[in-house]
Length: 447
Image 1 (tube, rainbow, N blue to C red):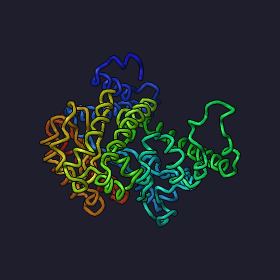
Image 2: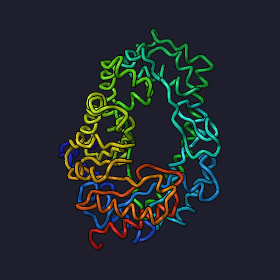
Image 3: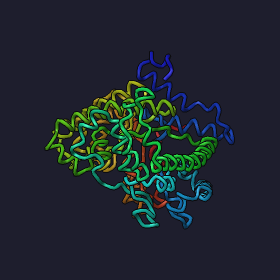
Image 4: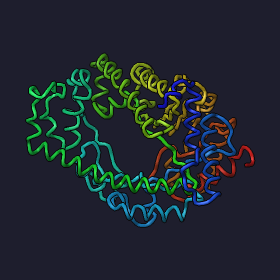
């Protein structure tokens, strides 16, 4: 962050980030109209984030991998064939972008060859653990940190990640188990280079280089497409992902079964590990977002939902560390977007602890009337058009549901209409009905 920005209040820092996002300089717009709607779309979202009334309720549509199936292809094909991926996204945008008020983006199709090269264990994907026709990838539950490894993690998280965790989740990095802790490197006579001489270690590094080259090909495709999107008048929502510290421990490391047992068997170790992860999350999230000049940091909240843990556990294990991370990010001028997967009805009364306009809640299945009443005075609200409705309902049913949502959550501003979660099987006509509903029923003032 620039030195002069450090002297600003959090509100001033965030406004500066918003203005940098809206700044059209450097974007070769395809027409004056494209520049005009770029500003309109961006300002509409910023007003909603700030709990103001824009010209109308913004609507965010994530088409996911729908473009592949729209033209008789599938996720696997486009995740390996970048030329075809660009062709399909371009065609989908020509056919639907105006009515969807958004673009299909190739980022949704992760380059699966990278995962193949690295022999990634943490997910299944089409052709690897899932059917070739599967519409995405699936997390593989497991104990990637054992119950007796808390002390090793707490002593040196980076060393644990390098020599224990990475060999478990990337098959090609299994030889990294042969390394000594890097703290053994003092000066040349005391440094052991033996692992570097081992063919399997050399092969691991070559695989990493190969994966990097493949990922670079995909990044060039994504970068070119992003430039085209901007030039056409669609501002890219500049965001990073982060995780609640408890979710990092419970998803990435211990797994669901492991963390459930740990909450009862070793709660002190759980809290100590959460404290360590909290500090790492803050520094990493701020560093990455600043490096990429992003505005939003989005948290998919996995294990804090109703029914997963009781309120006492939520207020002991989940919320305090997440709140600490959120406050640190707010202070740096970022907008924090909390994606509350599942139902958060029982949490609403205990989470409205941040300054007005600092946090946005994206709700999946939460009661939106209750959310508006308990959070709407301070937080921007997103959601919660059911994915089941977008997949199985009619366009008229979607329009009616969206109208009801807008009437509940729209008054006073701060509401963004969007699905409760992404769906790769939603009907395109239902996504268009969402946008049409926002334009018909979500108008605050004539532009």
